[in-house]
Image 1 (cartoon, one colour):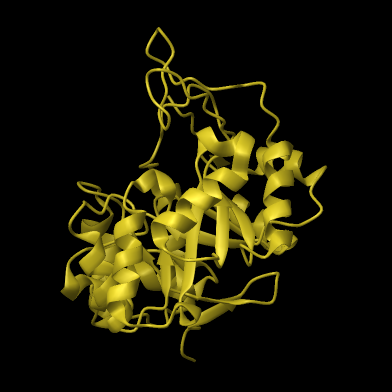
Image 2 (cartoon, rainbow, N blue to C red):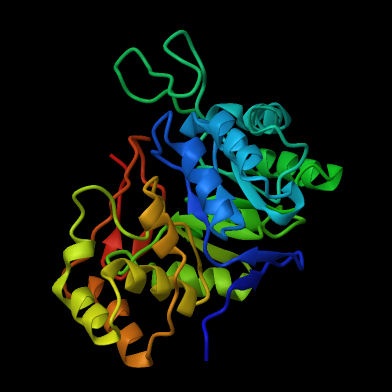
Length: 309
């Protein structure tokens, strides 16, 4: 059986199983990457205000010639805009040059307080992040529900939310998040979070599915063995891993050949999936993205909590 090309959100909307990630895509590169990806068959683009490249993403969409309504477009409200989600949304809409989003996410369950050191990454006098620990994330979500009802976003969700934060939000939400976008790969399988979200009808999305620059995942011998057995690249195995498990995957690249090959997904056997699922437990567990928020975001897998330094 061929792997799915789309999944269904709890809103009933269809979301392509593979999307183009734009995090860390450098200025001058992302516009061409987005245009090429859409011309090459992608219909899912993942963006965010804090990436600093949404204007180029929007121009790439225009350059592609693909009608807006055929594209599933995601952005995220940044931490410093949590007291005014509507303002953050409008900044992204204006930069992207669109009048609605298919999905809008709360980027982190963290509020930052802008000050003279900066709007997006403000600092305290001691050099730590200017985090408002008293901020109630249910207020952020209340605003997310309002913009959903306005029609400017077709679905709302979260990003980088652990079970404890979701449990707290669950006490007050009236709309269940459609998506939770998190770091996800065989070194960080997040089995418990996956099971939790599945029970609530929250679709997981995997960012950094190929690791990151210098990460050992792409050269892991067990992953390469599965790739050789299936006659494909390690990247294809890592991307296919998520789709086979019912997870949207967001590989990032600005190289045309890789953008094209990253959308290739194959079916994996239960044996292959079991090997990939167990790599972390074999001693390879590794989180690659740990922002300096200064407190524990509550993530835990079988190997215990991982703290943001």
